[in-house]
Image (cartoon, rainbow, N blue to C red; front, side):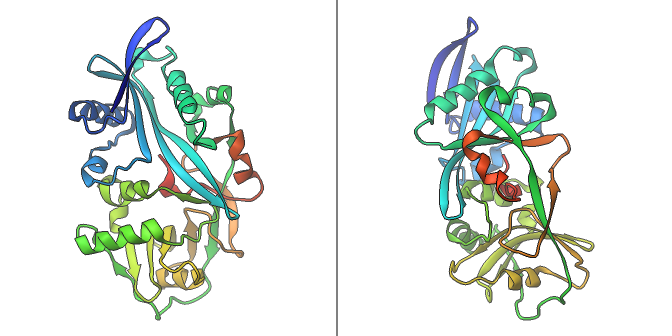
Amino acid sequence: MISKSVIIKDTSYTLYINYQDDEQKRKEFNRMCQEVWEFDFEGYYQSGYWGEDCIVFSLFQEDKIVAHTTLSLFEITKDNKTYKTGQLGTVMTDPAYQNNGLSRFLLEYIEAEYKDIVTGYFLFANDTVLDFYPKFGYVPVEEYQATLKVNTKPSTLSSLEKLDLDNPTSLALFEEYVKNGYTYNRLNTKNVGLAFFYCYANLDFGFKNSIYYSKTLDAIIIYEQEESELTIYSIYQRDHNVKQLDAIIDACCTEETQTIYFAFSPEIEQATYSLYKEDDDITLMVTEELIDLFFDQKTMVASLSHT
């Protein structure tokens, strides 16, 4: 844990960084998360998968948290080029402390601390702050989601087994594939900790019951089907040299499947792309260094990479 005394607009605060092992401060952070975002990080912490790529920055006055930003570090690979990027998330300020420059302080502090490490930043902003982030060089970019119409029958060559991550053997298998697997994602946003955040540590997100393993295809797929619509969230394939995305898709389909939605940017030519927003009032914003990741082709940040 790092702590620093800071003064912002003539008011004293204490900045705490990476303090999640401090139970009292973590409890206060979780309280604020629940009040603002209706989820918290306690399950993530207790899971043991909260790694060094998730860094919390919070301003406190005595024992009260008053402002916060989480920095998640990613390696984004596109066209064999890797970018070290940072995503800012769970940005929040206590209502009594708003308009005092606290979010600005945290954003500028993070960028200064990581200027030699991070190539560029991205975040998901709601409509109330769309005028705030451009002051720091962020610009809105459009995301596009890939869809496929199903015109083949489900595959009988590959059976899928639902993984129970409460089983230590299944958990170890999942960890191996997430760390090392090939993802078929054109905009590959690698952050192992976030996969466990969504799929293991937080039951409220529901993905813990959506994880399937195919021994035949040597792959783990996270997907959900609702009536005729299939959504594939992530794919992790052990062998990086075998290209079998069509077979993986077929294995996920049922007789009812008519449309497949991809919650990432799949390496597939026949997909149809349409403008995508996870929520109507949320916009992806990026710094100048990352604009080319989105402007030269239709793509999206994988849903399981959001913070």
